[in-house]
Each structure stands twice: as structure tokens, then as C-alpha cells.
Image 1 (cartoon, helix red, strand yellow):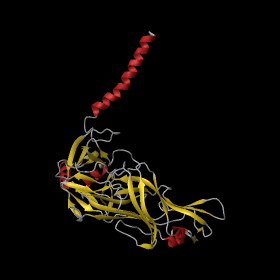
Image 2: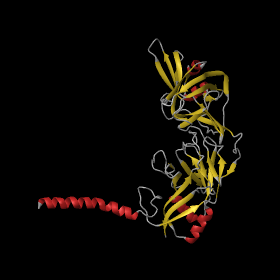
Image 3: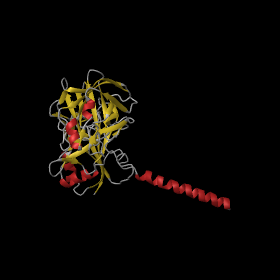
Image 4: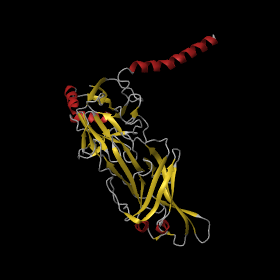
Length: 415
């Protein structure tokens, strides 16, 4: 009897474990491929297709004081050539409000750049020709800088000019500076502002007479800095860690050469292809107004449970896809802002805005935004931007509304 009871209990436990799974399978037939994997919705399923699309120059991109940056050069037959140059302050360590190293004997000054990535081949070694020069005027901490801006350099103060091999497995680039760098950092200053005014700052670039390629830099890492090694009064060697990343104002300048390509105009027709190019290249705009208005007329009380924008990539797009595509739209003031569904991709590790390699398209959640458009009765358009457009060179090409695979909004609703 005891054995039979134990067998019955075991059978019941197994059955109980199986029942929720069976129920879930039965209920997930509607829109299973559309929905958030953590949530189940039931309702009607519909699709909106776009009216028109075009690519638009992104030539006024704000680049000052971001946590990640990039330097170097890249060129290809489709997008032409792009160059990125870094301008940065030399700032005191964060806890210091003054400095006096006038009595110090300096051994060396080393520029350290913590690597965030290499492009276009993350597995390759690159022979980069680095050049580091002093600026002729300081980068201002209370000024915003854009990708089209540059700053003059002091032609008599070149601190580094040579080739360095950066290996795929390296985590940091170290450039031992020469020239007049010791006289620059060997300063006495009663404030952070005075020191910045005296030292001016640095222009860091990769000259294009060696390997073509781009180096991503993590400014938020404390090991991105200018390290000065010195001794004072005969004591052991010390290191002063000047800031050039976090704690120092900096910006990047992007320059494009579209000679021999179809690019260069302020906008490019996107009905067949939409181009997303970072580093001040191109964003894309797309509009679903015709089918949205038709759906709203037929279903004026529809409640959207889930909606997803799907953006298929064209076969000629790079294999190395950008990490995320973000969606912006015009707000009531006429300015561009993130849609209501936006989730920071650095803190949310789902599929929202990322590439689905199995399906060959980007997936972006637009549930709240679509509901808002239905309330308004019109779509003023989406702007598509690359999340890493200031700090990574990855670009992509999307099908347009008349392409072989169409961008669409798929959604589940009830009324």
C-alpha cells in the first residue's frame, strides 16, 4: 500500500509539472514569434508596411564628453572614407585642486588608451601610425562640441610620431611621449582651470600612411590617462595620473570623403535601401502613415498589447552588425526624442533594438509608441540611429519599403 501511494504521488507530481507546459503551448499560437519572450498576449494580429524612407546626413552630431570614443581611418567602396580624431584636455586627478611639481625630476610621460575594440577586423593586428600634438588653445569644459568641429595645434610641439602595433588581444595602448611633454606637465597651478589653461590639451590621431583601421577607446576606464613618472628630493619614483578621459573634457571630430560613392547629399532615397552609417554619416527616416490611418479608421478603439518594428538587413551589409538601432520621433516641441518604449541597451540585455541573426532583421519594441500614434491618428515618422554611432565604426544597410524584404510593424491588439 505504501509503495502504491508513493507511486501515485510521484505520478501526480509529474503530471502537475507537465500541465503548465501543455497550457502554455496551447495558448502561444497567436503571434508567438512577435512577442516579448517573458510575456504572453492573446488578441488579433496585424501588420503595417511603410510608405516611404530615406537616409539623412548626421553631420551635427554632439560628441563632447562621451564615455567611449574612436580614432583612426576606414574606407570601403560603399561608404567612402572616414577619419576620426580625438581632442582632449589634460586635467588634474579628480581629487586634486592644485599641483606643484616644479621640484620634480621626471623620468617619462606615457599616454595610456584603454581599448574598447578594433575595426574592421577585431581578430587582426594593426600597425598604427600614432601622432600626438599639443593644442594651441584649451578644450573648454563648459562648451559642447560637435563632430564637425576641430581645434588648432601648436606645430612646434609634437609629442609622439611613430608606428605602434596593436594586437587583437591587447587591452591597452601605451605611447611613451617625447618632445617637450615634460615641460607641459611640469607645472604649478592653484586650480584645475589654471592647469588646463597652461597645458592646453592634446590632439590624438592615427595617420593613414600605415594600416587603415580604427581603435575604440574607453574613456570611462581610469586606465585611460596620462601617466607622469617622477621622483622628488631623491625619493622613490612616483606616478601622477593626469586625466584625459573621465574627468577631462574631450570630443571627437569625424571627417567623411564620399568621392566616388553615391553619398554626400543631405538625403538619399531609401525606398530600396536605407543606410545607417556612424561617425557623423547617415541616419534613416521611415514613415507608416498611410496604413496606420487606415487601421485607425477601421479600428478606432484598438488597444495595442504588443508591437514590434522589424528592419531586415540587405545582403550587402557588413557581417559585423552594429549593436543596437534606436528609434527617435519628433515630440510636441518639434525636437527629436526617444520613443516611449525606449530601454537603455546598456542595462537591458534583451532583443530590444538588437539584431536577430536567425531572422536577419533588427527588432525594436514600439508598443507604447504605436498606441500613441493611433490616438493621434497619424505617424510623423521614425528616425533610426545607431546606438554606437559616436564610438564604433560598424554600419549596416537595411531594406527599404520597396525592397525584397520590407520593414514592417507587426502587432497584437484587441478592441
